[in-house]
Image (cartoon, rainbow, N blue to C red; front, side, top):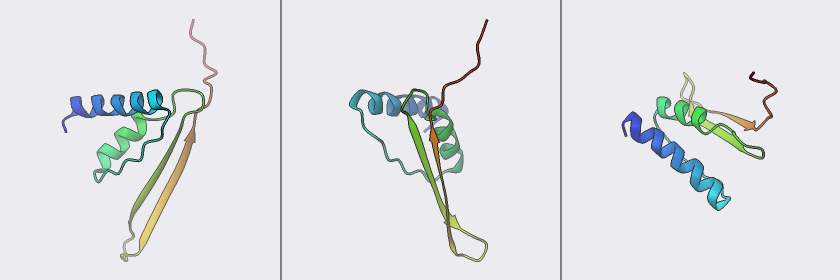
Length: 80
C-alpha cells in the first residue's frame, strides 16, 4: 500500500471499530507500517485503548516480545 491508502486504511479501521463497537486485531510485518498505525490508531476518545504486541528474536535467536497498553487520557492543554 502507498501512503495515501495506508492513511485511508487507518481511518477505515477507526470508523469500523467505533461504528460497530468492536476491537480490531491486526498483524503487520513491516516496522514502518506498525509505527504509523500505532500513531494513527492511538486512543483519541474516552474509553479508547490501544494494545501493541511486538514479537521477534534476540541476537541469539531466542524469542522476545514487548507489549504496551495505551489508554485515552484527557488533554489538559487549552488553546486560546
